[in-house]
Length: 213
Image (tube, rainbow, N blue to C red; front, side, top):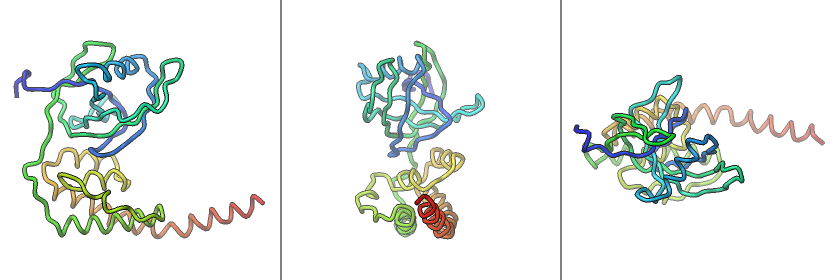
């Protein structure tokens, strides 16, 4: 792939990861990233797009997520920002350049080999994830939550407690069925554990509440 075929966006390396469709909060305090946020909201990037790349111990994941500034929650007097971002698409970072205080990523978008997926597999993920959310939150998620173009794997994974290594596998995958199976395997392990510990959590909370009186 030639350099001219690559896209370029500001790069924000962090020890965290956001999946497409996932919403997360960021506190921006370093001068270089405060400058980046300013540039992200100006032409030619008025939507506030940048690359959020998982980095730990100076090692960076090749596969990352392009994110968009959804909302500036609070702008502090000293220039710090509290913002909400949403993952928009998967990317593979092919190189890094520096034109400002912050770095920029040269990347190409990662897409699936096919737009099809197994409905039976998707329904299993749907059913188990609904059960997980009801168990944890007590609320029944709306059906609209699962109405996603390109499949539900990323949105389900975003709020199912998957670890960073599993999230990296999801970003690298070119197949929705492969991602759905990864999510299903995770849910099959996680849901029984949460169901087992929930009575203990309620007991601890109830006892603590009584002992405060």
